[in-house]
Image (cartoon, rainbow, N blue to C red):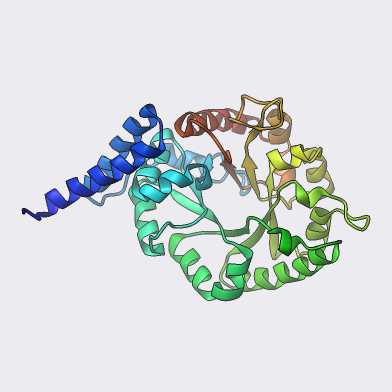
Length: 312
């Protein structure tokens, strides 16, 4: 058996492409397989710069770059992180928000980002992980280049009963945020709809905003879940200006389910028009479930690129 490097690469590519094929549609399979071949066979070189890094930071605050939350492509990430990152870069995205490294080291992730002309200003880290692995999380963040580490979700047990668990969480976020700040990193909190359920006469998200130090803890406002809870994101921008450094941009269908950005009912034009009031720095396209991943991320990039022109 010939175990040359070339044959091993071809075998690995074929195996990964086969696994991808079982997880995606024919259209997705063709595009992803092409990306996988390129990612696994190309030499290690820096990729294109995506039109001068998509206008990284304007006026020191708003970034016109379009980001992608990789949770949207999580099943493909499980098969091939290199192919997934190449796909995202080819669509036009320049910023990634990670939800796991899928078996890769921080050093490997950084190399893959560099090869594709990408950066990763943010990553989602489960709350429990900060308790058990804080220093490694911070070290990895420094390696990859994360500027934000985001608590993405609370289990029902973590939510508990009444408002007290959120008051305790605010204190905990301040403590973690202080450790992050020493490393030049900002901690952030990402909401769903349950943070808007009134408890003991108080709204959990308001507690997390008002009882955390704005110098230590930022907010990543999920626009879909905020609207799903019956709230207007702009009202929050006006009430707490400058606190919402990150957004998840995903749309809502008329029946309340997920939709590709720009095809649903959320008034993104109004939201983006108040971007600087919010304090926005990074915007990540996301869709929790989708039947056509490529169409979702292509539509998301197109919609947010257009919406970015209306940020004020």
